[in-house]
Image: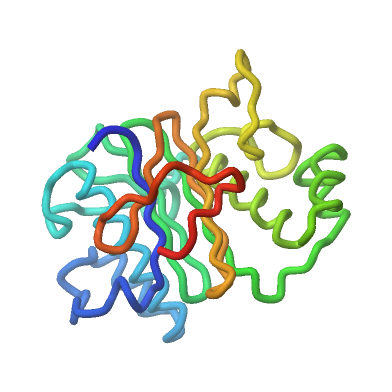
Amino acid sequence: MAGALMMVEESRGVLRGIGSYDTRLTLQEQARAALLTDADRLDYVAAHLLVRICAARLARVPPGSLVIEQRCPGCGATDHGKPYVRDHPGLSVSLSHTRGTVAAAAGRSAVGVDVETTAGFVFDPRLAERVLGPAGAAAVRTAADPALALLRRWVRKEALVKAGHGSLFGPTTAESGTAGSGTDDARWQVRGWTARDSGAVAAAVSQEPLTLLRSGGRPYGPPTPDDRPGRP
């Protein structure tokens, strides 16, 4: 399958039918999961399994054959930092989780993914201007749902940061999905996903064409104008 892949799933859906995850996660992942509360543990485990599923579809190997590790580029520690696939240097992966929903992305070049819940999120004009700059903040302020518009831009910027591009605070063009040609941001493909029923917003970025996969591996069609293809 060409290009990069993005998957978004309900946490319980990922874990359904898997049984024990002890043999599927590394000892370090198991230790991290054991420190979390029940709900947070479910989301953490589901995200770490989904990124294996996503990467395996791209690499055409069984998910159980992939080992996901982390390394911090700043301090070199292996208990946090950017995830990578051991023994597959040609694969780039990213994962994220929020309350009840997880997301993963995999590609042959840098990828980033982020997912956030809409529950309790309200529009904050000061936050919007800090993250998006004056023009971006004005655009989301006049949207039909300013909080949702801000959160959708937020996850795109988070995904860009995870892919190694820019920082969360300060305007860019790529996080809006409208980068102009000739700019560094224009190299990035952006794919978004919003589920109003489950209250989750996600985005993935890559320098390759991005395919959003449904549960079971079937792809959605081309992105809609508002980048909202529906439920996973």
